[in-house]
Length: 159
View 1 (cartoon, helix red, strand yellow):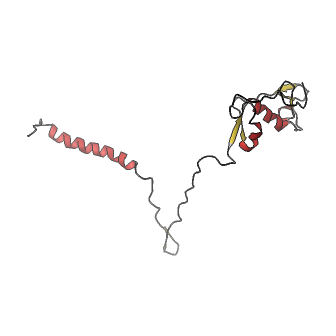
View 2 (cartoon, rainbow, N blue to C red):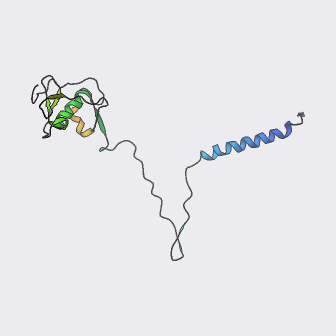
View 3 (cartoon, one colour):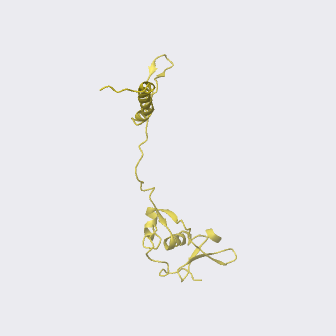
């Protein structure tokens, strides 16, 4: 059976196939391997050819190494961490000595002797996991809402 095409359509069908093929060619070639051609050999000063040194590709490690693992301390866990970090400091002010009150809060004294309550940052404190293990029973360890608070700890001083 013969199909009769109008005069203008005979040439447009092969052209459309050709254009479709040309447009899909970049998509097909871009999905291939990411190998690149080796660089050309380097010419030695003596006139001979020397092949380039092999390309060193670093192996990316999945996960974190022990030195990179961190825990997020917030709430009571962060306060207790800050207290332990500053309790023996000889400085004054916010970077100075921290105290634990009877009501389970942490404070420091400024140069005039006034007490200032310490509040942990809302985003928490990033602490190496090995160092943070001692705070895992407290509220706020890695975002946990349950756990101990600071009221049952022995305060070093009271307000």
